[in-house]
Image (cartoon, rainbow, N blue to C red; front, side, top):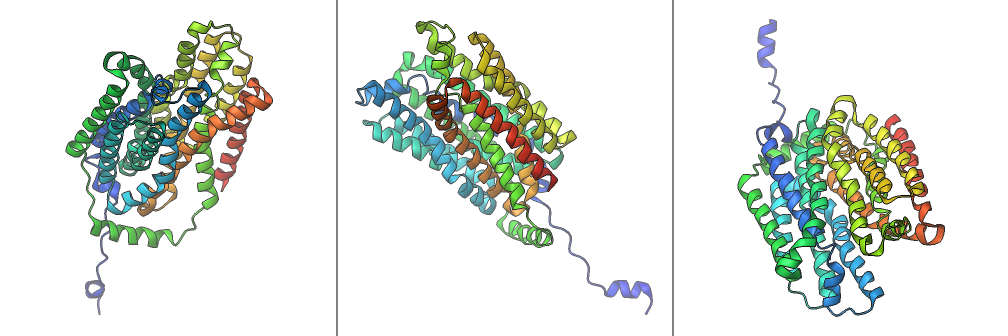
Length: 418
């Protein structure tokens, strides 16, 4: 039998099913824009209660100053604890049912819960609703899953950097808004305004976010990707190193939070200006990150994510040390800006590597674990910083955190070699 006849008898190869990113290549830029706005508005709403949270706790019947501080800390951290607990679950459901439903779920849930916080009568109800906000919410986490899954591989770092900029801007603007709105519409009215902002973000998500996700196509793609993945081992140690590094980013940024007001007070700032100056210094790291997040994300696309991670970890660790020797508050503020600029390259680069380290069928779940690690760092950081400040001194917080970051760079280098 001649060669042409033989070729006619061979079964034709089935075409490779299009990946999720390929199917959504016409949507990802618009979806990125909506996710940036939605992450900004939801984080403004969540962080704007910082200036007046102790006042609200006092209105709810807590009288002693120590109890007010304690309940304020519990209420604020409850949301991050809830998000850390459920982010992997929502990531897995995003892999199974699509990314857009998770965005809508988060926005609608947070809008309802934020409005309900404005009508609570006890501090226990406040803590419970803040916890529920974390459990059912997490718009920024769902946005990371969508953008990290849809953006082309060669532009994923830049896209995640842009998304990170929106989230950082929300954390920066939120306390400023929270300092103004209660004087105009009252504390309870401020929560209603926050719920309305998130509801608007939910509406934009429903109308403008587009996603090509078919469960049948996804099942075929999942089978194909798992078959391909079975031929190469999953480096769980590398994934664990990425999760630890992600946790360290937020831990380093938040470790100073419990001591910053006391530390600045020791730099000669007058008592009537102390709160305002402390808030400004806290915002400086977010400001620095906003300046460089997108640029460092794009740099990771060009020179490799591992290179950016290693450089940012070492630089951030080095910038932490001089903060222990400042003699004026503005010196601390300037160093916090530099620290934010170096920290900003870490999360987009880590998210990009996490996406590439697993099969497409597990991308959402992996990015969910990454979000959980980040929020864990946000919860653990203040606890560690407060413990070190009490037992080893305020200056030791900077030394210990800087050392941990440099050690984490060693861990990242080990993971890179594997």
